Image (cartoon, rainbow, N blue to C red; front, side, top):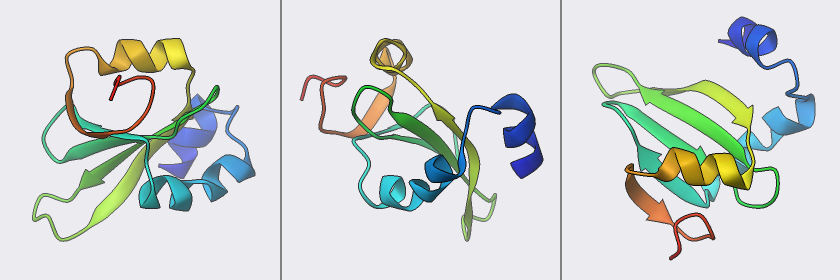
Length: 93
């Protein structure tokens, strides 16, 4: 995963990875777009979007991807998704 992240998302810096713990603890929006996957986002002008995935037996989770986003992209991503939790401008809650 780290190699994939470095190759596909070379704009991600160390401070973005350090922010993952806060994102997992207090996400602005959580949605699910497929089985065993949750997408968590932060809020603001340059939100982070993390995808976590559960193992097949459901005993463990791992970070599948982390990327930066923007408000317009977040609104597009959320259209038609099953929002599990939301508290910001993208969900209008």
